[in-house]
Image (cartoon, helix red, strand yellow):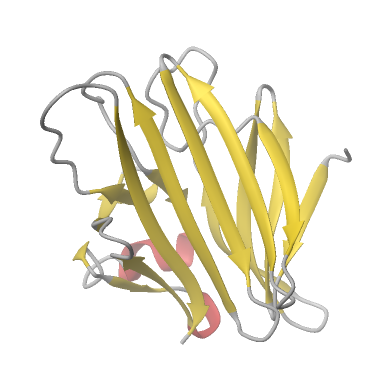
Length: 187
């Protein structure tokens, strides 16, 4: 695998890069000759049991009959197993992210953290925090937390930029699975 691998959508792409023991990813809007950085994942290290973003060590792609393409990633940190799927629809300017973590104990933190471009960071977060929230990104793009399939997701300000987190309500026996979903799309 080369240094960078991409999942291409209509006007948007996800660039995956190998960093030590895991893959980082960046979401870019793609114009004719220009690439606009929308989001860049904040990664942890092999020493972190609860990293800022899922520690994704394996990457595979799947083509669907409807023309959409999926990136499927899995990884591990501490005693937890993580997964992320990213779907790029062939006919829309939209990426759908679906993340999960199988935990064996109460987590210290879970979610996906992203750096935002400097010009965007201060203004974007003012109205976009909370459940079912929308954060306006560069060039008319937006990030939306989703509550699909019973998974409740929220957006929060983070030191690095923004965090997408599951609403945690663990009760009962371990292990359990937490899930969070979000969409990047052209508004």
